[in-house]
Length: 114
Image (cartoon, rainbow, N blue to C red; front, top):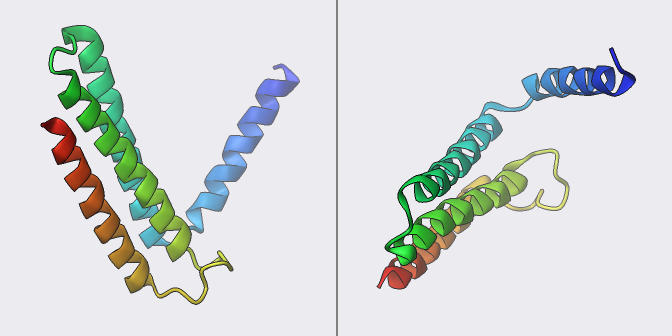
């Protein structure tokens, strides 16, 4: 086995062991981010197969998924207890910011649809 493949396998194993210690609320946010990115990927594949006739709809769907994923990553950073930058920020405030930003994002997306 090449050294690079062995190093990659060791890296994945160590990341898996470290991820087990991650709190459940962060794992739920991670799952939401994966779902949002998978939804964007499905839309891109669909556009590649079927076509992009209403291009505004395609762009709105993909940008909505990507924007939601970015906002969820920001929420994850703010809610993480190990992050010292946001130690004074209450998790409820971070979630309220997440909801408000999602509302603004989706209002812009709806406006872009026409």
